[in-house]
Image (tube, rainbow, N blue to C red):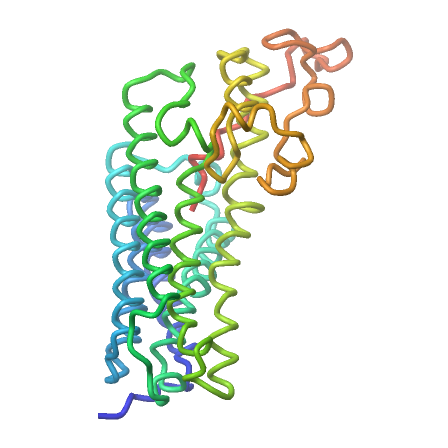
Length: 341
């Protein structure tokens, strides 16, 4: 039975419409009921819907399409389950304090979530499309496929274990403790590293049909273009909603309140920001290598002289930085790790 053509040969339009409709439905509930518990569920489950829909519309269920679709679904189920469990425990999402009852700022978050879901799903969406499956596909199990499955397994394992370690740590320690054990001894953000690995692995398997010469023409270009998905995810985590919202703000808060600052500073100096690496070696590594190979960009680094009015950890603001009412005008920003999508 031939594949079903819906609006376009790459399923881009139908997946975009499904994503927009699905997210707006949950936005209406969240905004009307002032309710946080379905926000992350809406994002994670949207991946599952797109994967199942594109696979179901195309009746050419070859091994490569099945594997990539199942890998995306497995990742989305784990993410959705964990985030739903966490929000049910915490009761509310601090990301939305101050915006939950403001229509357009709150809607902006949901539009951002639409872009995240649709773009990151692109490798599976295009691979399942009629434009690609009309070409004869080679057997699953090439060297590229095997490397992709290994990368995916490592990435999903790192993401799962690090999320569990961070949750258990926060459940059993107060706000002064530094989470520097387990995977957090070799990476400050192992969960982000694992998630990036997962989606580059899915892309590697999806693009194999084009890379090995079985898909031609516009479909060939389309498959390669889907690398936008994992790159967009990495961009979000590295420059928008992940590391930037955690590194400097959290470090500034620790420094200005002298919240176990010495232990936290030592963890920063010894621990790679993203790529897991032995702390004994990272501590001695030249700064130029940290800023380039290990992606610890200057935008993440907290310099008390530049970024704080406090001259020493836990000290008072320097003279001239106190408001007319005599109150310290500095504040401790919210940790960015609780603000990640």
